[in-house]
Image 1 (cartoon, rainbow, N blue to C red):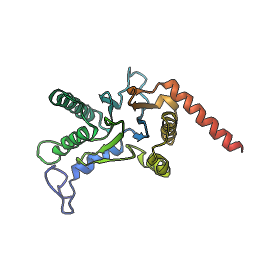
Image 2: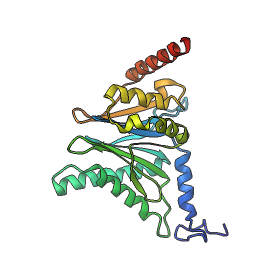
Image 3: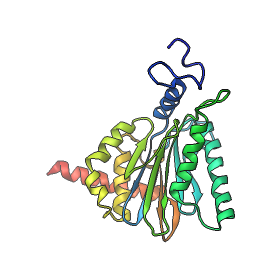
Image 4: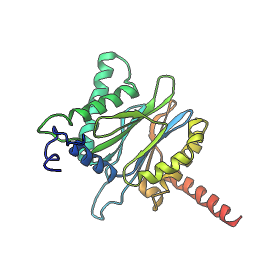
Amino acid sequence: MSGYDRAISIFSPDGHIFQVDYANEAVNKGTLTLALKSKDCIIIASEVRSSLKLQATTTSKIHRLTDSIGMVTSGLSADARVLIKKAKVECESYEYNMDSTVTVDYIAKFVADTQQKYTQSGGVRPFGVGCLIAGLTEDGEGKIYKTDPSGVYQEWHCCSIGKNAKTVQSYLEKNIDMLKENKLSKFELLKFTVESLLEIVSNGSQNMEICLIDKEHGLNLVSKSTIDDIIGKIEKERDDAEKQ
């Protein structure tokens, strides 16, 4: 690499900025997170890693930006905290100045722009965070955006980032036709989300955090008891399938 990874403002001969590549690796080693949408709701979810025995609380990866927009992150938690704070301030500033609620695409672009600013000047480093920003438009349509440390942002039908994201992404791709139809009910989408998490999560609801966004109730966390009930139904269906 001959020193090309020592400064954020230097390209390598093959066009790479190595510090951005390293930041992407931090995202790939972070907690698994995913986002899915259907006709009348959006779900954002995260794996919850087991806490230490002496640790009082665990840090949530899911954050409320507005009543209808949520943000879930993977990567360095300290970097995520700074980025989330900037996003929340921008949401409040937009609402104050424009006298209307911020849109999903606007705040996704703002987060991506903020991440990109930290890739082109000396004395700083990229945010080691990937973000999934999901919410509803005024018409109730669901939108999901993914941002990465380089500042790129894209809209997705469904998406996962973090450790083991490729496994979950493959599971989502197998069912992409069903997801694109946007015909799943809230319960069906919630059940599919739990099934996706169970591809890599082994300790049930204790290692899952799920949030549902709909037009009627806004953004709300799904209770552990509800997740346990869904896991029980999934396990029963699998047992019945094996017996047949």
